[in-house]
Figure (tube, rainbow, N blue to C red):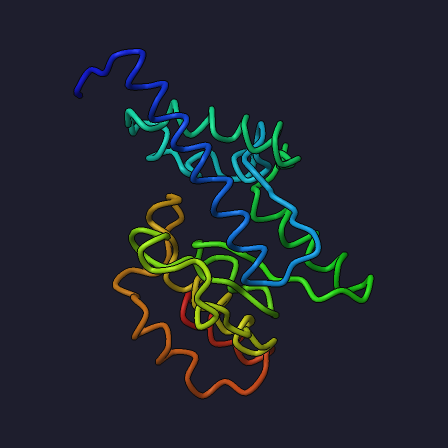
Length: 201
């Protein structure tokens, strides 16, 4: 692991903060957003109580950037009013807020790179791969509409495949294509659930 000076670390952190501000402003412009709500990681997660191996692999990974991630979270909280998802995932907060905004008659857009959030129907802004500024955070083609049916199907597909990065086992040798094949003939959520349970049996 390379060593950096305090000055280099400080400069890198300042660039992180500036990039964060720039991303938020560009996304507000792209979405014509009146307000922005930012969810960040908090303390604890009920999933770990249910399944102790949840994200266990990630906890053993040491990366130099990890220290900066926590500092940028602090910055997001102080400068942008970000909310920590204590006892849950930041994803869970986004899900809760999404339904609150819908109930209030607003048109929320979920902004994320995480595929798990596609289990939520509605408008999504999908972060581009690679450098955000090179690919353009203002690109409206990155906005997709996830229907209720697509969201349900995505959820059951995830259950079949599992998620190795989160330490969640799925069915052996079930990837995206085989999961799609298992659910291909389903016409409603009851059938999606039936086929998923049948596959596990």
